[in-house]
Length: 313
Image 1 (cartoon, one colour):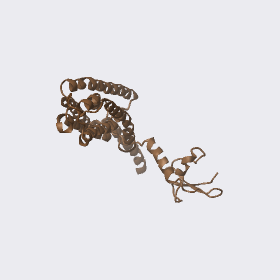
Image 2 (cartoon, helix red, strand yellow):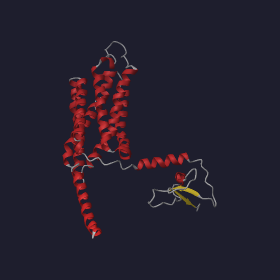
Image 3 (cartoon, helix red, strand yellow):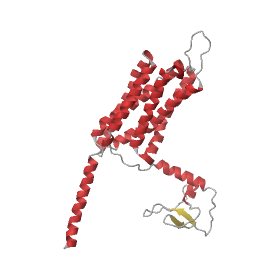
Image 4 (cartoon, one colour):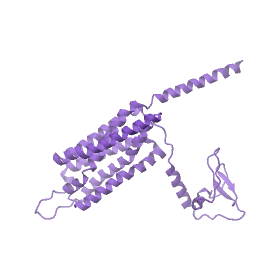
């Protein structure tokens, strides 16, 4: 009788635990997170576009950079900001998850705009202004250019960590595919709206009022975005990192390169291959991609649940 009662009680306890887990999951995420994420997206978009949209003019007028060089520098920065988010997405997927990467990226955006504002407000961080008919313009010193490039570097790191991961983080807050679709629509609306505002309103302030105020507005936008992101932290779902396929590909290339000089004996000798996790289906090496086959070779040979002996054929 005791065993029968235990059998009757056990499913109930399991069902209660399952329901409590579902309730805990429901308390996180959802549309309550949307206002915080929307402000963070707007803040970062304003900060990035406000700092880069008028950068060519800033380099020419304030740093006495030739127009051709200024255009090349601006193009390199724009390209870096466009490509860097791929690396940030890989790091978030493989190691840390989205929220920590986005939070650090927003902090870097604030620091970048602080440095930009200082370069505009402190005369010592810029060369002397050009005077018409007074000879060649003074070039910026190494320290002055280092301060400017530090601001640009921080801005690129900010874009790397936040641009794609903000979208992924927002999608993680919803279970229904329809809700995720709606979020992505709003993400692109806020992203491009902030880009347009930065390239028009903030650029207008920089050209007509002052560079200090223009960069200051961008800095304030990044601070507001960071504050909104952190205020909503208790509502976010933060799933752990699931791993990135790019890290697996990198491991294959590195392992194959390290073992490229390992001799594999032919004929009747056995080779040791690195198997998958215990309990998983073991994949037999094939003739495809023989250039990376050495990745599967255990060197020095050893036995264990990871090792599998295979014949040459």
